[in-house]
Every structure is written in structure tokens, then in C-alpha cells.
Image 1 (spheres, rainbow, N blue to C red):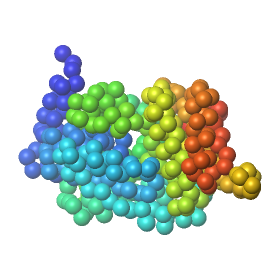
Image 2: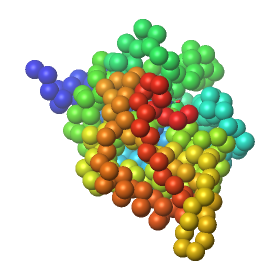
Image 3: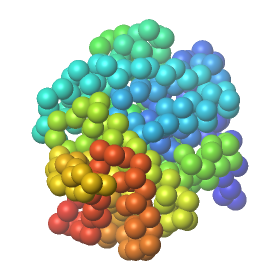
Image 4: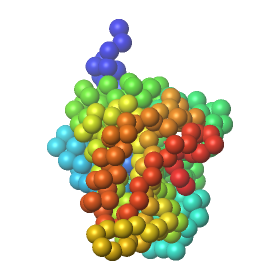
Length: 322
Ligand code: XMP
């Protein structure tokens, strides 16, 4: 009968059979549930023959890198964290077009990943947390590539990699749905804040910091986002939303503080409910909660003097603002 524990045994058996006694496996960790769970599974299956690479592109949320490290390292995942922040910031300097940002981030990601693959290699296999719906979607054409930056294949035709990086793919979750992966994650000991996390796009905060990004703007956005997401958790509203996010707009407007006028940024909050992320409704968050968030944000983040809540569905709006 179907239980997650049997599935775990089967998956481990399958990985060992595919990888053999000597095979070495490379995995990109995004910090999301799929790649993190895969890291835990592979650590169980092949131990140190797994190298999991987590690239910090400087577009992560507050404390995210530390959370991923704290979740995976104690459970035996051979995790390499790469500080690539300066490279990404350099490549993105002055770039304001959303698709251009995505392209640059994808390219820099592959570049950093290939470098680490050479540094720690050679590897025989590349592991990916591809799920059953991803398999279906790519077979059917889907609605374009929305996969995370940790999904190497989406950025790079694996057959087209340089010869010394010509990996075979290990994709143990190809037959599984997200709920099943979450259940497996629970049994493997992945902390709930990662296990039940909303999706987070590969390009990260870069597509929530509208226009050209800068360290200063990312820092503002990171603090606003943390207040909103922590608030949702604190008020028990997080699990009821499919995705929630903060956006830093380039709009500056006049405000008043004490005796003086301010001229500061407008931050937008967005929360949606959806089954498939193709269409979405804006989440009807309680006014009292929104009022609390607005107060906290303007009190704690002095660069922001106005907070708006996005009340647009998808379509016509998208979930992200870029
Ligand atoms: P939109 O904004 O198109 O987003 O309504 C739908 C879902 O896709 C995510 N998203 C991305 N994920 N790379 C990703 O990995 C991207 O470039 C990207 N753009 C959007 C978005 O967060 C939402 O879950």
C-alpha cells in the first residue's frame, strides 16, 4: 500500500540503482521544498557522493541562506554555499527590463554553477527536483518556463553542456506531486518553514524591486518583505495564501513625519490564492492585519512612507510585478 515511508525506500533504492557504488551527483539547491527534499533524500541514498550547491545571488530574502544551511547541514547534506553576490550585482547594474534581468540571472547562475561543478567535480550525474506536473507541462508545451533558477535544464540544454559537464539526469520525483514531496520532506526532517513555504521565483527579489536594482533598494525590500511574511505567519494567515510578496516600487511620494515632510518610496504588498498559479485571486486579508502591517513597515523601514495592497486578480495582472 502507498505510504510515504515506502515511497522513500523505493526512491532511495532507485537512486542507488541508477547511480551505482561510485557515481557522484551534483545538485543545485534553491532553498525551496523540492530541491531541499531532494538533497535530504540523496544524502540518505549516497551520502558524501552528493554535492549540493547553493548559490547566494544576493537576491534572497532576509536570513534565507542561513535557514537553508541550518536545515540541511545537520541532516548530513554535503552542502556548498557559494557567495556570488558581487557577480550578480555587477551583471545586473543599470538593467531595468524584467526579461533582461531574468536572462542575466539565468546566465550568471549557470556560469557560477559550472564553475562549482568543475571545482568539486568530476560528477557523473545532475540531480533535479522535477515533479510530475513539470513533466506534463513540458510535454504539453505549458505556458512558458516558470521554473526556478535551480532548475538547470530549463536554462541549459543538458546535452549542450561542455563535455566535462555532460551529466546524466537523476530525477527521483518525476512521478510525484507537490503534496507527496511535502510528506516525504516531513519524514526526512525538513523544517516546516521550508517544507510549507510559498513558491519563490528563481530571479528572487530582482523581479520585485522594480526597475534597476541596487543594494540599497534590495535591502529596503528585504526588510519590508520580512515584516509582511513574518506577520502572515504570526497571524496564522500564511498557509491560507498560495503566495505572498512585497514589491518595492520606484515611486517616491510626499509624506509627513513629525514636523517635516518626507519624500520616500511606496511599497506594495501582494497575496494571492490559486490552485495552479495560471489564474489567481487576490487574498482577502483582514483589514486589521493590513493596518498592522502598514504601521510596522512605515515605523521600521524609514525609506518607505506609503504602503499599498494589490487588489488585482490574475488575469489581467500577473502575480509578480515584473
Ligand atoms: P506570474 O507573475 O507569471 O507568476 O503570475 C506565476 C508564478 O511563477 C513564478 N514566477 C517565476 N518563477 N522564475 C521562476 O522561477 C521566474 O522568472 C518567474 N516569474 C514568475 C511566480 O512567483 C508565481 O509563483
